[in-house]
Length: 235
Image (tube, rainbow, N blue to C red; front, side):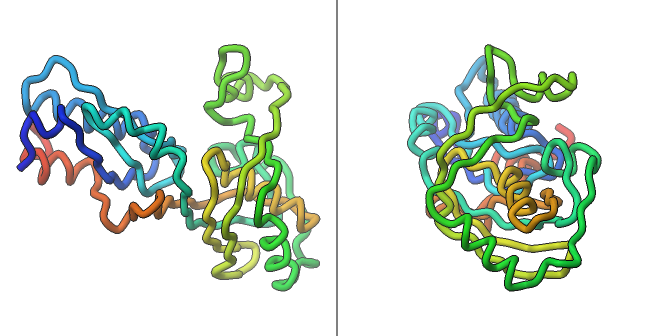
């Protein structure tokens, strides 16, 4: 069982973020659990890379003195698996918002899909989604998006180390991607659809690795509360 000093001196926790939880909710759950368990007024807890609420998977959570390692952890390559739905787009590039446009997919072949994935490998320019937590003039981009305001989002250079198509069952395309910090897989799904003269959006996403850290070794927030902190789920 971990002690108060363990968490204050620094722990790197591998958390498997549940679907529909925000990264903030996951971190807050860990933070409040530690504070309550050890009757602490405060303790530093932070994560090394946001996951959207509709994404699941690996969240690296640092406590105490290990929060100083967050920027270093954020720079490591990340691996994701997920599903792109071709033939339709959404304003958020995922299922957070409803479909706003539909496109033909009859012309799309497996060879075209494989070739499109190859074309996105390496250093590419990507425009982040308007529905994101990036800031412009002091406000989160999603604040503008939800008000229907049209703002310009600056493109950025990112690197796709690997883009593997793992299954094709149109309109669904399953994939595995290894990418650099700052990559938006939602934008990749959107751009992938455009590359195929169609549309595309993300229907599922899981972060499986950050550097050498693997989601297979991660625990849910509920497991952390019950098994690591030794608390009953309702305490």
